Image (cartoon, rainbow, N blue to C red; front, side, top):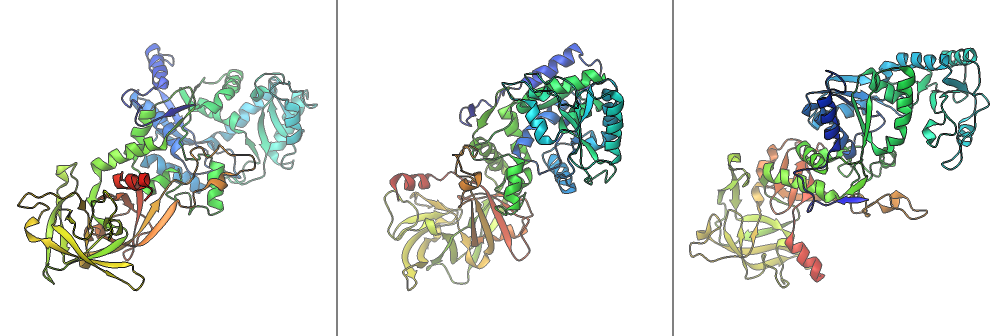
Length: 568
């Protein structure tokens, strides 16, 4: 297994053998004058996740690079697990990521053609109706070291198979009583070639075709033929489908249809992340998370809600490239690209998450003034804003220590610090409640230090953010951490479940945060850097009376490292 580290990965020339294959096919005119045609083929049985983002960027990105086209096709062959909700969310996520499709297609569009091709294979003696149960089919299939054995129904006549298959379609038989199987080789070393099931009986209503069908094609039969129908030149999929490629070729060759080329690449595996749709669905159904778009989820809707940007995700996917070997990528690499994008593009704001009141005793009562603050120091064109300042302020609780430890440079009795873009202040005394908790810190300020610099040139070692108390707006802050406590959530001991390693501290809700008043104008999904705190975005749960911000990522905190190292 290989591991990608953000500190060592060369993002300038990521490996992408897929690009090289397509470039060579275009150069040699493998498909004549036809344009490069790709497709992104999700099953509508769940929400897209970060792993799909890699596939989307490859399918759409490579087609765009070579002047080609990409279809969005839903491989909707399992009506029991598919819902329109998933169809809608997938389209929304693909567009949010920055792509659009040439054609919107469904495997169900081709049910009629797939049925006709099944009849063709039956007539050619290459498919048969089998009455074995699902368990019996598994037993007859054999193992990796032992060949399978023929079904007792394998040698039915063509006429009998045609009659039974047509009656399956007509709804004469109950679910699971019969299947249609391809007649290939029960001794093949590739288990996928041991007479795979093509159709099963399922009296279930389909989200698009309703009750028109009671037999449905299996994924391995419908997928490759759908590619062929759409004249897909380069059918890219992850490595677990490599053993299925001979089956896809067998169907194409025996049906005499357009030969789509399947190419496998490594799937995205992120540390501290599960990408199994079955397990993600379990988290949703058991209410371990608030839904598919919970910001702790690796779904695109979840990381979008958390504040990740499509630009950062695309950059990340380009940086990791595509290889023929599965590996693991540190989640810190994704976070690295997101921080970089937010640092360059996010507006700054001041927010105090755990407020402690500061009273400046020598600042005139009733006075207020405004200080000019840059909206983004990385982007001068972003301009400035006016932030109110007054006698009473809020600072972070962690920014004051009555008895400071060594190397603590923030506010403490007798110590002078800078309030960002405002004044130097010095702590003089504290007010406590009956239990000894600090309620207020009383300070003095230097009026000559307006703007954050002293005329006499004296230096301070700490600059702190603040919010004017009379002008502050209240908000709920949701602090998110990794959903799992283990880097590889699939690495489980015997008897252990992935639910056992859920992080009990993955969400911390802070109800009484104080924010500068400009944030009252924020819109849902607006992204900010709360200075000295982290990156945040406005959550859809926000109302006019209650703002809710999600932490996207923290900033690096050198003091936290010092405290951790010292055991403080």
